Length: 282
Image 1 (cartoon, rainbow, N blue to C red):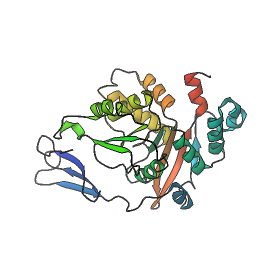
Image 2 (cartoon, helix red, strand yellow):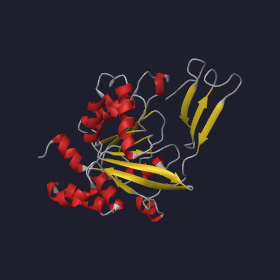
Image 3 (cartoon, one colour):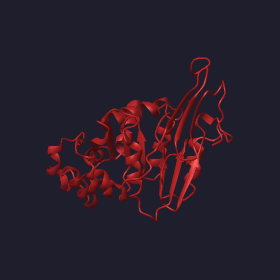
Image 4 (cartoon, rainbow, N blue to C red):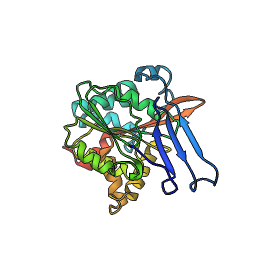
C-alpha cells in the first residue's frame, strides 16, 4: 500500500516479507527521541478446525443467544431444513459440524476477542472451509488474511489514506461489488470499516468471516454499533437502528480467549429465532 511515516503521520501498520505484522510509532505520538516497534509473528502453520477442536478449542464454550436455550427444542420446527440442522448442531454443542455448515451456507461469522486470543488462527481455519469453486475478494489495510483459494483477489488500502494511492475501504468495496464475487472478506473491523461491513453484507454478498475486538460475544454487537456510529458513513444512524441491523445481519459470533497459554472459544452466539423476529416470519 506504499504507506509513509512522518511527523504528520507517525503511525504505520505493515506486513514484512515473511508475513510478520509490524507496528511502528514515532514522535510526536511517542516521547521525543524514542521509537516504538512491535513485530507479531504469525503461526507458521494453518490448523484444520478439526485439529483445533481436538486440542480442546471448544472445551470451555458456552452457548449465547437472546432466545432462552431451553426454547430451542420447542421451536426447531419453525426453521427451514438447512437452518433446522444448524440449530440442532448448535443446541447439541456439535460446534465443528455447526461451523462447517455455517461456512458452506454462507452465514456471516464474526470472530471476537482481544489481541493474541486466536482470532486469526480460527479465521484461517474457517476460511479454509469455503468451497474451492467460490470467487473471493479480500479488502485489508495490512495483508493478513490467508486465503488458499486460487480464485482470490486481495485488495489493499493504506489506513488513513496515507499510501501512494488515495483509496480506502469504500472505493475498494465499490470495486469489489463489480468483480462478481461470491464472498467479500473484510479484515478486522475497526474505525470506518464496520460501516462498510454492513454495506457489504446488505448488498447481497453473505458469507463474511471477519474479526473485531470485544470482550464477549454480545459486547461485539455494542462494539460494532459504536464503530459504525463513529464512522463517517454511519454517524447519522441511530444506535438502536444500527444494533438492529447488526443483529439481523450477523448470524454467528465466536468469542476467543487465550487461557493459560491455550486458544479457547469461550462463547458462540447464534439465534435464528431472534433474526426471524426482526425479519418477520416467512
